[in-house]
Image (cartoon, rainbow, N blue to C red; front, top):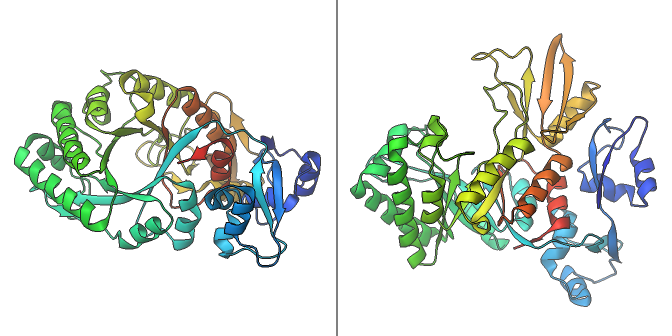
Length: 423
């Protein structure tokens, strides 16, 4: 496995010939639909199959898996096109294995909204351990506010992926309510009601656990919030369910700021079964142009995180998107446009931009001008993702958690699958 950065005048055919790989498979793995639309500076994942099977008449994935003594799921992960075409046919080329030695087994998770498309969902599920469905809110009395989750639960279960209920402090208007955070941190009666209802929903809908995703917790509520998470975990664990907690990206215990002060890593690490470090959103909708998940900053958060919580109970947050800023940036006025990683490549191609790579942030970016307005785009590619995978492995973390799964970015999953077994 390697990553190739496109140079001027290169083509899919010339790159494939350089490495002795199939141009069709090179396009597929990198989600390229038109070979003429390469961008200078674009990063391509190049995978080297070590064993390939040509499908014969009457063969099935199960029979092929049996013949090679591998799992059907491993074949699906190596050949995700079988999900898209819903079958295999004589002449199909099936990768049995790659030349890359897998490091170890990791857990993968990602957040998804109810409006996710069916195609995006079923293409992503083979690469997941769990899927977090966003989100249930609650009232000041601790009554749950449900979301439209039945279809996602059913499809996830079909693919062997455990669904996770996400709890956030969203009120009846589906808006963030800071007072909900305080009441659930301070009022034991409200806690009891909410915990009771969460357990009932988890049991009724066949969730595998609850993820507590609270932000903007007041400093004075830090202990009470951790106590709520602990009580929820104790109750759900008794029935065989898990509780995780999402953590704002801190770099020290005494870090000031509303998103940090109520997040006590040590207390929350003890309270929950596992935790996700939300290592993204340095570049965000209303902020100045920055890499969404710069590796230097992500590393600082991870190093603090593993000093407070056992690494094997920590997941690394992964960004699955980018932003496009109009320039000049004006605080309080400029609003960046959220874009997908494949969309970023399209924008670069359509505007004759060359993709650059920031070596400190380990993130791709480019600039362009459209209708007289300058723009800058930061996004994620296989280079930036690889840097974070190496960090996760070096620190011995449990796995990965993606925000979010509304866009399918195949190169990410082909890279993860090449390096790790997925639980």
